[in-house]
Length: 485
Ligand SMILES: Cc1ncc(COP(=O)(O)O)c(C=O)c1O
Image (cartoon, rainbow, N blue to C red; front, side, top):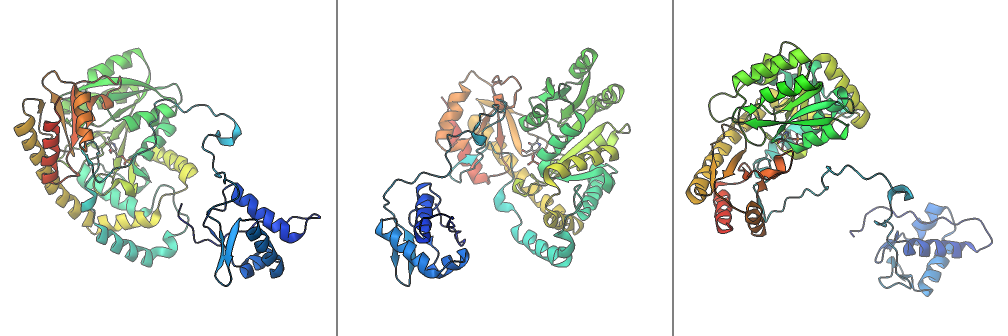
């Protein structure tokens, strides 16, 4: 365990008949036994130790002598005192993982919640990770801008502020939504969140009561399902096909049951990448208006569209106030920044901001103002344009490799946008065996089953290309080919 640089708080003597130097020594022994003071750890100098407890230094010197005599510490005059590496007893770690929190068993968490680990190793080519290439992140630009912004507005940025997000970012986002996505949003319709995940959680809390039904796409985005399920929503999976969500299937559900909301990814359906057809968009909006269903639109990678112009979000054509649109900077910049937003009718946005204040008070306003400035200056737009060219080249490189080397195993359509290719297995094949073998050779790919509501394997897989250079993608496809069962 790394040693900290804190001045260690030493146990205080207690009242009682035992001489004070012994009380001090016993306090230290006890802290060593329970694992608070660790072998090799340096104790404070006798002068500082005595001063911190407001006692005579000679008492501390006597306590150290006692501890040394009993084999707990060793000290070198003028240099200091350390806990011995070999102790009279085995210390017990302070945190005992086997104990239930609070000392009482808690209700188990719902089984759908995934384990916490989420680490990417540099040795592995994670074609399973839906994230941009961190090596292309504009570190210098961001650092420079952050410094400038905090220098200029620090006094105000470092205070408590609006839970809906820093005004400069909301204004910049409103401009972006209007210019680029055709949504005439105003600042008071926008709430900045820590990634779209928080936006989804807040929308769920703001709109859905436990037991109410929410329709979701299947295939679909599990983290959104989890946010909805956690607040008690009943999820109704609706199939997707080559035109996106099967709106007729949704209409049939609506005839049977009240549905509070529907979660969709119409721009590039997650994970199949198809763009929802114009007729389905109109039909979905009309259904939502007629049945008063909130459409939760996740427009997570709007900026990465390679063929023609991006299709406008559903919200751009919503004149009934039935759409809340969620966006993220996780794809255009980096997921570690945790910046997303929701744009919604004003009353809903206000409700969401008030709920946000309870869980997080406000976001990281210095960073929000920095990103606001990057948008105002056109820097973010420049970065996006640069990334679009790179990612398109990577998409084409992966597609070429897959066709050349796995053409008899996989089939796919070139995705019009996004950062991944959805491929179907075209012959009988043990997909799990194949992907496990590739994983053992440091290439990780997600099977289609992980995006399906029922968890059944459809014989498909998702290959993310954005993170890797063309050489790395070639290597990944070579490994996949060599791993075929
Ligand atoms: C469908 C979808 N929505 C949203 C996100 C982004 O999530 P967040 O903004 O919480 O990082 C992703 C990223 O993987 C995604 O695939």
